[in-house]
Image (cartoon, rainbow over the protein chains, first blue to last red):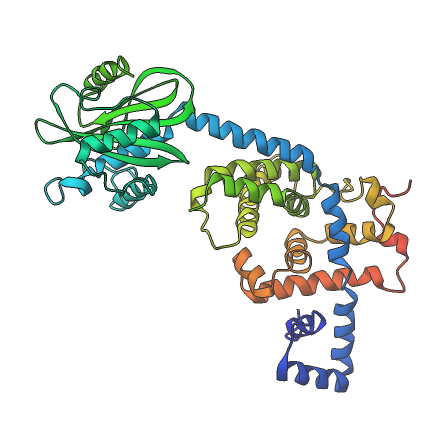
Length: 252
Length: 176
């Protein structure tokens, strides 16, 4: 490439403006060698856009669209069968500290980024992602009235009796949202003041038996029934998670 | 943060353009289709990484390019297939294109350029990126883009040269 090629191409493409254009045009008039170079480069201006437009018509769009639909739908089903929202719930729980124990309760364990100092940002993002317009609508009547809101949104009977758990004190109820589906979070503290949560999402999940898991340094037990997914999560053992899940699954 | 639905809609809208880019990179219709499929999977997996307000089509192109460079091309080279099969006539196996010899000639002339020049031509002259946008997209200095365009133009100028026989630049396999 000669030093002038870039300018010559810009001139050919109609992208050279102002004094630079005038200077180059004047040089072209005076310099036969430069003019020859210009002409060679200009001869490479083929009707690219028009020719390649025809290539679009050759694309196997219908087949690719069908494949895209399969991939997107499979992803959605996979997301439901291994409740990804549970990971967000775990992150939310790790940060319940934001709700009522600021300064008293340090976030636990290594974050999702394997103990990197930035892990908390991801956890906060996961948590905030669950907020919906309903989250901060104050329910007159306190936590018990908030349960009534959850009941109506989730189509279940939720009251202090039906959500009571052994050795846990019911503290609050929040209306959240995950992937457009209503997600209710019922928060507890145990006798040592450690937070735990029982969450319900109404997202059309397929029935699934209780399974335990651990995320964010928490134990989780999840199951699904009648189009609703359930998770109980907290700073307890997997056995305790399964036991609490069993108690709740008997009621819902 | 973008939703999967937003990414899915963007993919749906740009399938043909992504395929065309995959074809320009790989020179193979089948590889192009595989690249688009892998792009769909990757883009949906990473939906939350797309920044709303930026161009979704460019993000999808970048994903396809990354899959091509990091996964597909290297594998083809390892398997001895190279980037371009010299016996393969790539842009002309469709009946629509064969009806228009000049379009076929242009496409095959572009196809016969080295990959980097071919890609620069596609991005600037077909997809309409400015020189600096193309440089940003490819992560190269603008001078590199200009030099690829210059080399491409010089090579392609032969197609229009009055001394060259049209048949000399015509693609192989268009004899029927």
